[in-house]
Each structure stands twice: as structure tokens, then as C-alpha cells.
Image 1 (cartoon, rainbow, N blue to C red):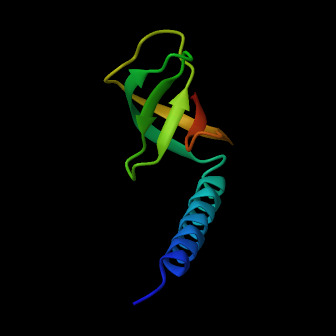
Image 2 (image 1 turned 120 degrees about the horizontal axis):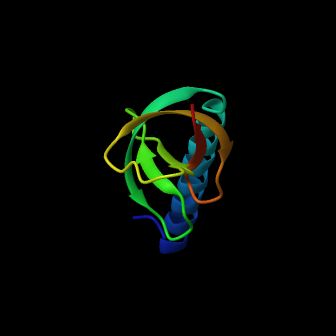
Length: 88
């Protein structure tokens, strides 16, 4: 059996690696265009949705397009595990 401290250290390393892989993947999406279905509006005024491969995206919209499929260009990374897009 492994010591609890060793388990916790290994778990921390795996979580950090998974987060780094996710961030690298998100960076590779910058400049790409995706169709997303607008799902909901956040308190900060962004609308949220996901790409076909489940990438979470936030976008500012002039009107409520919830339930609509829109084409979005990924323009930046968010600090909250989302990509920021703009409608095209």
C-alpha cells in the first residue's frame, strides 16, 4: 500500500498535467471557427455553448439566441476554463 502523502502528491501531479494538456489543447483552438449551440446566459452577460467536440465557449451577443446554432471564431482563452469567441 502507498502512503497517503505519496498518493496525494501523485494525484496533484496528475491534476496539474491534465490541466496543462487542456490549456495546450485550448490554445490550439485560437483562430478556428466552430458552430456552437447557444445554451444559456451568464450573470456576466456572456452566452455559453459548446462545440461539437464539447469545448466550452463564451460569446457576447447583441440579442438572445439561446437554442440557435451560430458560427463562432475563437479569439481568446478565458481564465475560467472557457474559450472566448465572436460571432462571424
